[in-house]
Image 1 (spheres, one colour):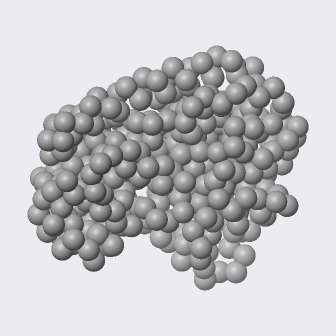
Image 2 (tube, rainbow, N blue to C red; image 1 turned 180 degrees about the vertical axis):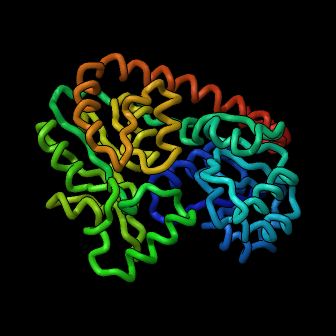
Length: 339
């Protein structure tokens, strides 16, 4: 069968590429027509409409401003489902897309309870793991040295909803007023301060980049402000050398969970808070604008390391089984007899 896949693929994002690899493995033996975005999918609508089924996901695809893609989804002719997605926000500027998905999709598989709540607990919505749990990384060997991996990404210094009204106003002010960041009167994200804390708390830090798309502000570029040498692409062997992880990107946290590497989330989006909540690790979710919590979180991370590692590996095993169970219920899997 020919299966169309709509997601944020081909952008040198380690999390999205791992999701795609998981889908390829799950549907091994079938042809996947993979698009790079909703816009790319629209440009390739004829090709998608020649598929037998279309999957939208995984990843955080339902963002503010995404309502403009509703007309494209309406034109998709094969049956479709959403798999492994997050709903980052619900607003009048993306409600049209949500409405068409609720109408057309056979199943909407979201990766956190918050997304289901934002979709008003619609009967088509089911909560399950991130798709990378279908084929998780193997547990890493125990590292005894006091080594912490660090992942940072480009992000605004203000704490407002991405693409919301306040965020839009702040972006305009930041662009138009020189040194506006210096006079911004409220609590703000200060990555240098975070690095200073971590250098004081760990013997060694290893910078980890998960996004390296040319022409964009990559993790490598951000981390290079603080480290002399940063690999341009994600290297799983680097993460395996770490006893701990402090990271912003969701898939850095997910990969660490799968490997049994206790982590602290520098939570820039609700999806970070959600993975911590699912793991019963809410105390290890540190808001970007309140780094006063970071030192105590590090102390707890070290004290509870063994318990957290076991907790993560148990969670990974459960998520692996749950993910396969949900995927088996998608009509496409039933048609193909995927087990």
